[in-house]
Image 1 (cartoon, rainbow, N blue to C red):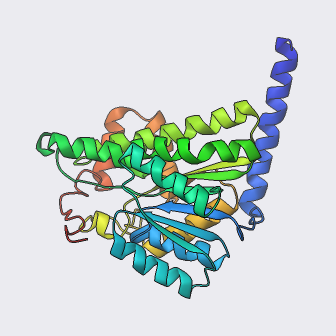
Image 2: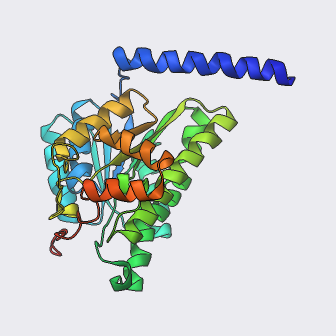
Amino acid sequence: MNFFLETLRFVGLLTYYWLETLVFFIVPKRKKNVSGEIVLITGAGSGIGRLLSLKFARLGATVVLWDISQEGLKETSRLARENGAARVHCYICDCSKRQEVYTVADKVKKEVGDVSILVNNAGIVNGKTFLNIPDSLVEKTMEVNIMAHFWTYKAFLPAMVASNHGHLVSIASAAGLAGISHLSDYCASKFAAAGFAESIFFELRDLGKTGVKTTIVCPYAIKTGMFDGCESKWPTLLPVLEPEYVAEKVITAIRRDQEILLLPRIVYLLVALKSILPVKIGVLLAEYFGVLEAMHTFRGRPKKE
């Protein structure tokens, strides 16, 4: 194709996609049916993972729960059955360990079937300044927050590609779009998670596997034990998010095949401004929204959990 035709095609599609986006903003896409899908959620023993499990259960999906906490899995399983899940399967799995992921994944394939919706939700946060983070915790953050995504994709993506059907969901973070004080290891891992998921999105398009959808979720801090103590300077503008709100938005994004979800909506604007404004103005924005101090009151999840 010559330059003129390629440019004409580009302009035509550019216009069409902008109009399509506008239409779907006014009249949202129809939600797809997930009944009968096999949904695997990592970190399902608590927090957002538990809420997503319950919501998928209500929608008739077969839910596969992974977590390192047996007690957490038992409680999520109990609640999922109360919410109408006909099939709930629980597996103890430390997603930071590659071989354990592969071993447990093989059990899931044999006992349940091929996973069609994979939600990489498990994550950890230390909330320490860079010079105060022990090396072992830096490594653990990377193993749980990003390397686990490699291993779960390796385990479950081949079946999705073979059938040209499935959905990959990466619960990343707004801290994967902008650096935040006291979160150097967490930000690094979430930047990596978002970049990895976006790369897989393009690989699937290159392979022509448009039936395998991807969703990257980047929320601001959520009111779970993971970010206990984290505060917002202006909660009306940039609130610490309610878990139920986040879970509902994530489910809606998955069912509408939404490629990226930023929460709250103001994050879209802040990320866009970060990309075009001078660095000093970016710092001024961070100071105004209290991003530099947000982690000063961080406590995190108690060790017993």
